[in-house]
Length: 399
Image (cartoon, rainbow, N blue to C red; front, side):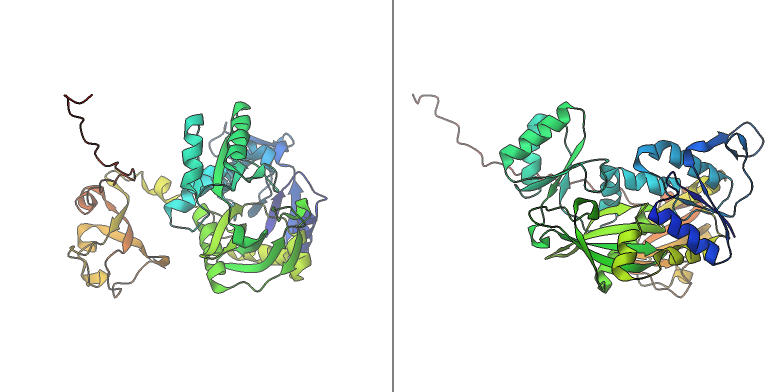
């Protein structure tokens, strides 16, 4: 395998470990400065230049894109994808994870447990937003902060309002998040590779500091991750579109709460804490997956006129409940079921013998007109605003 590691820090611990792990396994590996690429769109096929010359052929690319060059870095990764070069972390996945609001929206849509979070712009909406997440103290986060930078604990409503007003006056966008006090300044970092957690550590804040980041002086220790935490970590990474990720979770009374999904996790702290070859696990995974570059299903399949991708939900009053997939009549209607989602369980390429249950979600490819009749109308949202009791109309003759 010929592997390119995209990194502007060739001497950093993580880059050196990944390079050494690839070389030890007999792979050809080079560290390439992300900013020295040129995206070539002038020919018949997508191409890349490096240092002004045509890029030689690579089997896989491992992005280590810094936060300051996310836009250009993801453009380069996207071009590799267009050239059918395998990458464990797609441009879309990296982009999703870098914007805290965007990441929270995506994870929330798929029911991943997180601390209560809200986002507002108008000053008049700040106090109601704080109250919605449970009141002070609250955590205030800049949307694109890293390593604990831009994360502030506001102990009271007045302080929170003042901090948010100050940040917004400098055109900074912030999230307002519930402070999970029972986590006691600790969190778990799970290193996800593919569909498993290869290493996990607990990070603990020091002194009065509530941020547990190693860059903030936090200590680390190996932890044997519980199955519930592993399942949440893997699911969060995969939903974000990342096959290599660091997933940070709080240990709350309600179970694991995802704080962040990092697309370029550092390896030094977790390898030191666990004494595991995390870099080697990443290289082995890439080597195993290199024949399967990322394919955007909607992009590739949408060229078929009249066909598309849709999600069909099996409802209790539908004819599908209790029937094996093979007897559902979907194939006769030119509809192919790609995956079956049942709660957090995902069944890829379900067999005809799978019996459909109420609430199953079927990701389908087929004729749009056939699927249209199977998609129910969107339910009307119930208002969350509490109605005030009607006040008696004063007697016109009174007073």
